[in-house]
Length: 86
Picture (spheres, helix red, strand yellow):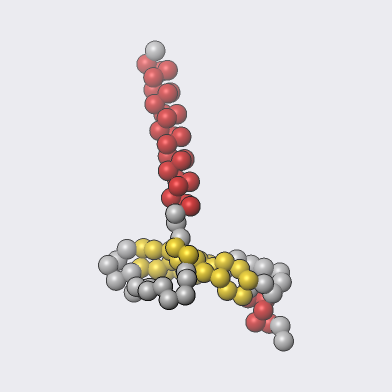
């Protein structure tokens, strides 16, 4: 009986963890829009997806604001391949 209760509790905790992780992933990045007031104290990383052709891709910038909180911003830019084309 105790094993069944322990198993049910663990399963509930695991499913709650997965659903909260999915929610955090979807609310992870703020989409940039023109005129957005940004508070960037330090850029931590910039991720640009690889693309084999010149096209618009969605990049993500992770940064720390002046309050020390880590935030993520997504924005659109041309892929790195476009810089090599004439």
